[in-house]
Every structure is written in C-alpha cells, then in structure tokens.
Amino acid sequence: MVRSLDIANLFRSFGGDPQRYQEFEAPEAELHEAVSTAAPLPSPRAPVEAVRALAEPVVQAEPGELPPLSRELAQLHSSRQASQAVAALDQALSRSRPALAGPVLALTSARGGTGKTVIAAGLAQALSRSGQAVLLVELDSQNVLSSLLLQEASSTTGSIRAPLSACLAVDDRLRLVPFGAPDDLDLQALERALATDTQWLTRRLQALDVPADTLVILDCPTGSTPLTRQALALATRVLGVTTADATGYASLPRLERQWQHCTGQVHPLHLLNRVDPARPLSQDIAAIVAHSWGDRLLGVLPESPDLEQALALGQGLASVQDAWAHGLAELGRELLGELRPALRYAAPS
Image (cartoon, rainbow, N blue to C red; front, top):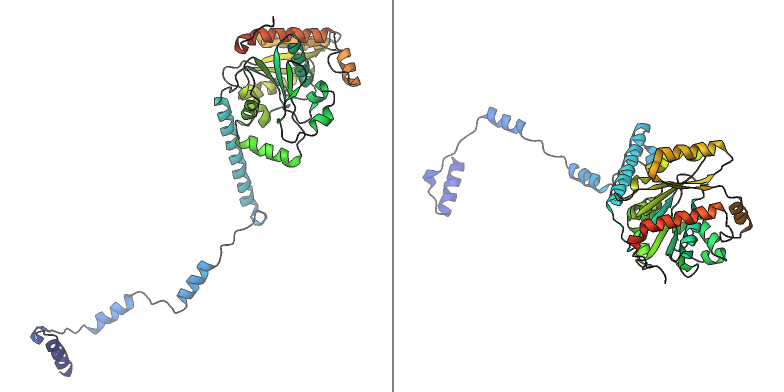
C-alpha cells in the first residue's frame, strides 16, 4: 500500500493520472526461467584477456619448422608459380614484333663447341667486305667475339661494366657491341631485369639508333636462356648452327624446341659446320640432315685446319682463305639476297 501511494504521489508531481497506473506481478517460475536462459555475464578478466590476445603478434612457422608434407607442398606451390611466370613470359615474347628498322639475324645453338661464334664473326666480316653495314651484337658474357675482332679486346671490354652499353668500330662498315665485363652484382641485376622485362634487349638496341640499311647479327648464348628467348622474339631470320657428328645430330630436336620462341613470320634455317669429307659418319649425318630438313638446310661448312691454326695463334679470321672461308662468304651472299628488300640496300657505286 505504501508503495502504491509513493507511485501515486510521483504521478501527481509530474501531472499524471494515478488512476491509470496498474502493477502486475510476474510468477516466480517464469522469473526463474528468464534468468536461467539469459546469456551469462562475462567475467571481469574476459575483456583484459581479449585485448591481450589482439595485442600479441601471430607467430608464423619458419620454412624449416614446417612438417615435411607442408614443406613439400610449399615448394611445389613456388615451383608452379615459377612455371606460370615463365609461360606468361614466353607468351608475351611470342606476341612481340620486331622493333628495329632493319632485319635481325640471330645465330643459335643447342650446345657448345659448334663454332657458332666464329661463324658469326666470319659472316659479319664477309658481309662488311662486300659493302653491307653490319652491327654485330655479342650476347655471351665470355666476350669471344671481342677477342676475335678487336686487337686489344681485354683492355677494351674490361672497362665496360653495363652489359651491351658500348658500340665499337671494327672497320668502316662493321660495328661490334661487346657484352662487356659486368661483375656478379651486375649480372644478377641483368637476370632480374630479363625475368620481368620482355623488351630489355629491344630497348638496348634501339638506344644505338641502328640505321635501316644495317644488318643486325645477334650471337646468342648457347641453349635456351632469357636473353636467347628475347633475341629469338626480336629476330627476322634465325640460323641454327650444329656440327656434323653424333652429338650434333642428337641436339637437333633440342634446337627445334628452342625455336618455339620465334615469331610466327620467322622460318629458322640449319647450318652444318665441320663436315669432314674423310669421315663417313660425318658425311652420313650431313646426308640425313639434308634429306630431313630439305630447304631448311641453308648449307654446310667443311672442316678447316687453317681456321684452327689461326685461332690457336691469335691471328684472327682474315688470314683464313680456305674452303671454309669461301663457303661462309657464299652463305653470306645468299642471306644478303634474301634480306636485301628489308634492308633497303643501296649498292656502293
């Protein structure tokens, strides 16, 4: 009763009608059930523990601490990512088009010891003597071209740190771009650039401002490398060099696979080097290759004792005047006849 009077006085103080007030009492059973089903109140330590859990950094296991199966799966994932990156790079290279004004001849090989670099040097010299302007680009860090064509190659190329950054005159119509002598850090930077930049080689050559009447010859590294793939994507003519022996014949399928990075308009050609008339096996291999590849065999070059002697004595290629040198000059004239429309060639008067 006292409680009702207090509430009635409270209503009158605020201008309300105390007659409209009604009070209901809930049964004890329902009140107990409502309390039991309500969510439990958090303990006083719960917020502190939650904040502490958020503040603590998540510790990740190091690769060496992973279980063997997890570590194997992580390595497999990285391998797949690398394969996908290489495939994407190859697709980008296959879609690229030559970006130089004149034609580009790329010399490739599937293995070392084929004489590819010597042929590149001899071909460049033979074409320049015939009046054709040639830019010979050395894409191999061994700088063999420089030692063949320049008198003081070690002192000249040893001061060139950035790869393919210099252009040296060999004679009036032949210029050489040596690979240079970068240190290990420079080579690592080049590898990273080639892995992500599909136009690295193109921009290097464009910076040289090559005239449209100049034939660019690329001496590619042996095998399939990032620099070789960029050279093949840039080339308008590809020449694969191999030897007329069992090892050379076995490497031909690998060379064909390497050519998959060429653009669609390029039809690579084969060149057999060191065909020995005195060896029946060498003659048989030359006949098999000629029968298998037909028009794709550009020609054959014989063994040259004079060339071996000139290289051993450091006399250069100009002193070689045998059947090998004459055959190389003939191949140069044949290539020049095919490339002449693209060169906008003007014969000297």
